[in-house]
Length: 620
Image (cartoon, rainbow, N blue to C red):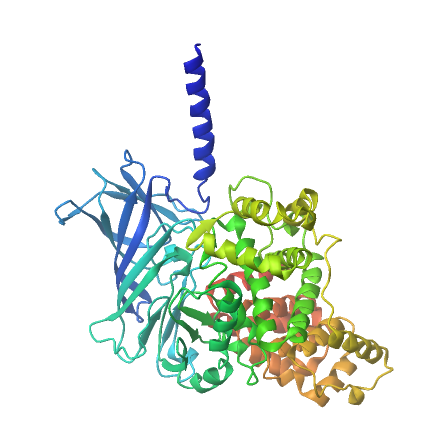
């Protein structure tokens, strides 16, 4: 073999290795985006509440990368495909052959479209299933007015494929437009440019000019009113809830300004929010231009607005700079959790931020005790072959934030803040991996400040179990004072009437209830309830923690308000742990099963699946 042949072989090997790294495909998607990528999406759909379906077509604009490719593979789940068309060079639409591959329980079905050439656009005419995993169709009885139905989506992580045939991976970003027909009297809103003055005549029309990944596709349809909060912020909610939502979210414009002061301009135009019915399964979803929110954050005193700060923070970490696959989830949620604390500090001061941070870290340590060691890393060193190798989603929030805070504490904010803003600026509207962040970290921080973190400690944060011993824990003076009172109260040395709670905020109550969970007696909880009305608290975070402690202590008086709570709230953060605690208590198991039979239809499919799993485990 001559020298030129050897060099050519080496070059080919290097190129192949580079290609494998550059185009490591998302294992949770069928899309071959190394061959072709969606650059734009248009949806023309009709909402049918009687059949619980969306029907119409999706038009995908395509960017062909591999000039020899002739197949387009899209992700679908339980979609009924009527026909597929491709647009030729003259703009004419012609039918093209397609097949739906065998369904996979996790990934759904690949829609394989066979093409004779490389068309600029394809159209898929389809209908969703009434059981679409991204959509929840609510009856009028499940809404506040009881008069009109409601529908909303939750596309994260890989549920967009159940209502739109797309390349359903965070590695692919596209702009989108839509025209949606809905029944008269219902407003349609989307994660796009919403016009509060629109009437829906001729269909509701939307445009999202910034490129987003599919999991940020979102739609809501219902009896909605709009309120303006500031020059670029507003809120939509059911008429009976709009006044409370407007009050609770009054600081949103200030939050946007606070975030901009730290990490640069807000790049999405408007920041509006949609307060959903209580069956929404999570606290919030950061759909760009229209964050979806649980009504459980409305406490009447703006005490739970850290949730808004978190969803707003995603406008930089997650929406602007996105994890390239779900293995790298911590790049979205860990960064966002860190940014949330910084926003709270700007708005409400260091003490409030530190209290929230301490509670966050304590709950992270409690979570660690329930997880096997491999799940405690931010990500594994395994190849990205599927979700079974992914680490715990919940831990990614506080552990990722703790890692970034450690870097900040050691480098100092004068160094770290420009570093983090540079990460957002240089990777804006891109999908990234942990390897890219580590490369950026080494070049832009550790090269100039090598003592900030060693390679060994960096590896421990990313791939090790637990929280490194070198990590500093947040300590709030107010929470330290609360610790002393709690200890004395549990021992019976401090009477309930002498607990000085007049100046406690929601965070202090949450910490107090976390710390007495499993330790306080039924008699002590009864005294707390009689003194402070915790079982009927308007703050859902406080009520949830009191119910959990009450179940473990056998405090039977919570059953009536707990029943009302489980019948009206579908947020998984609350519902799943409460059913778990009830099922663990023999005296409550039958009661819990009865309540769930009543409440199940009110919950989102994701919540149903989580509780179903618990019920099956206990019955088995």
